Image (tube, rainbow, N blue to C red; front, side):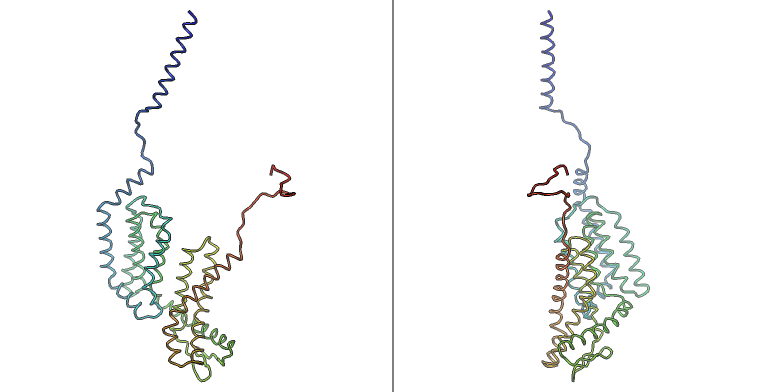
Length: 340
């Protein structure tokens, strides 16, 4: 009798184990709770609804209606003011930022991003204040705030932060306020005059600076407001931001680029003035004017970009990052204390 009881218990245990194994092979379907990934997918699918396209078209239409006069004034500044003729290049470069940052694209997380309404409200306030008090820079800045708010609403907060460098870069297409332009123009004229005259003297030329005029033998070079270097300063600042977004590895390199903006702008502008003076000395006056107004616009910006790149490369060679390793004594290539 005891043997039979033992066998019956063993058969029951075997049956229970087989039942568990069978249940594991064919588990019953369970309803799992919604995960963040599933919610993100559902939100992304909802983002492709026609309502999103309708909202985008509506925001663009309102933007064009509210800022049409500001857009015309902005294009007129690009056409008529040499210091801001680079404005046509700013939007394509901003789009290029997004292309180079495509590997960091976070994906659509939650739309609509109602936080973008704050930027839309700021844009409206800037537009009203600019038109009420005849402040064109406010109207132009309101366009950038509207672009940022539109991206936030239609694509979500994460994509807004991803696209923020490109949106901020649009500030370089807006002319500076007249008061700031006047405050910067006069000192830049004086500095450019003295640096250029000193450089011409180093090259053996009889250059004497008086005010904003360089007397170069029988010729006179007047460093006018257009030659003050304000345009070069804005262009070099845009180059520094481009390098900071696309090529910098850490915050220290970004600080170096910021510190290089003013020196590089002054040197690049002085190179243009010195080249014009040398053309007056050894070529005709017409050739020097052609270089100053035409060729310099194509030659000097690449020179400034090379100077910024050289400063960045020099800083990388100057400071070498190393990894921390544990200290141990070594004899014949083997550590003495392996416990460290």
